[in-house]
Length: 110
Image 1 (spheres, rainbow, N blue to C red):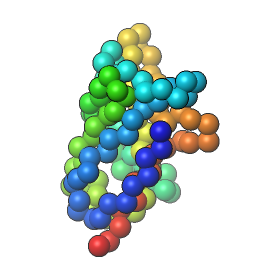
Image 2 (image 1 turned 120 degrees about the vertical axis):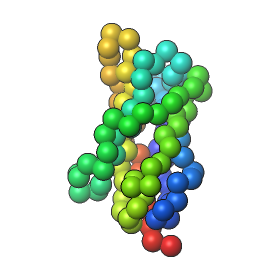
Image 3 (image 1 turned 60 degrees about the vertical axis):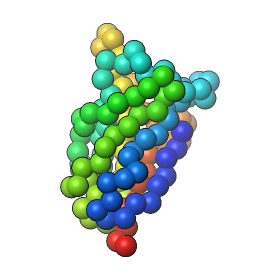
């Protein structure tokens, strides 16, 4: 499930689009029943870049978050967590694989 990507400062593509998998089975999570999908982003020092940004998801477990200009305006390591809200409401965070706490996107100066 890990997404590790390098982007250049100012790039808005590719979208952040990991496939979320069930840690018990390794299979993609069907996201069509999700009430909402949100992305939180932090720097490698723990500072918040943004929280609760809306994303979309599909039956194949892939989410899509569209970068905003401020997200990639400077060189830094971004650590992202996806939070899926199911009915109840019950929140499930990804990645949830053993030993993996976040997705990493490294923004570099071209």
